[in-house]
Length: 285
Image (cartoon, rainbow, N blue to C red):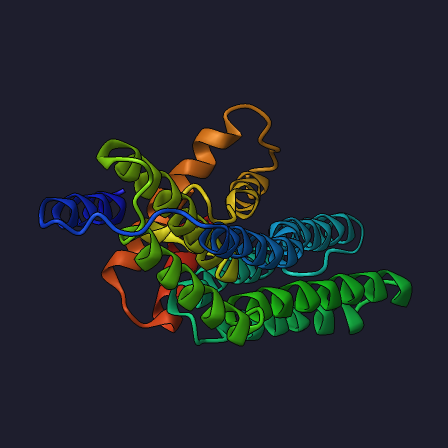
């Protein structure tokens, strides 16, 4: 809105200086229509990536739930694996993923997912049937796939040349609006305000889609939420006491979010963020 107000103010100033501008023509109308078409086309093309981004936290949470619950069933029958260590590793996956998203160029969550193999090696040396362990390793492979998808979506730019063209196109349209007389001052200001808001909002939408994940204070309502992973942490904490959280899970997940944000604000190193976050959220032995 601030940029829109500046543009409207510039148009009013130009009018006061005697620069009323040219009358609308079929060419200028075609330029604006073409801008709307091109921007809409690119937005439609990137929405599929945003939908994939929305599925990624669900797939990761599902994989972690499956590994934890299967391991708890095995422990009840065969006494393995070490559930305390497994819970720490599962929570580390969540905290390291947040640290990677926050840093933007780290891959600590990959190491956290590979650490789950320590639990599977423990099972290999026990009496647990091999097909049970194979299921856990399949879930681990699913975690890798979802995580790499998150990395890819955060790093990928959808047609960079097209995005540069859109920015240039929008800039030219805004300049055109500054020097077009829409049948009077009031009409011109309203038109400039509406069209500049429309194009700037679309440009902002493209920026949001290009980096769908944000955490901490940088996260907005438009970014993909990781609340399911926070709820998983709540369930891990409850399972230490032999319980399953059903009521007030959202409130407890918000408390987990606040704790993680507090850690992320205090620590700059992504590795230390993941370690301290996991240590803070892991149930006591």
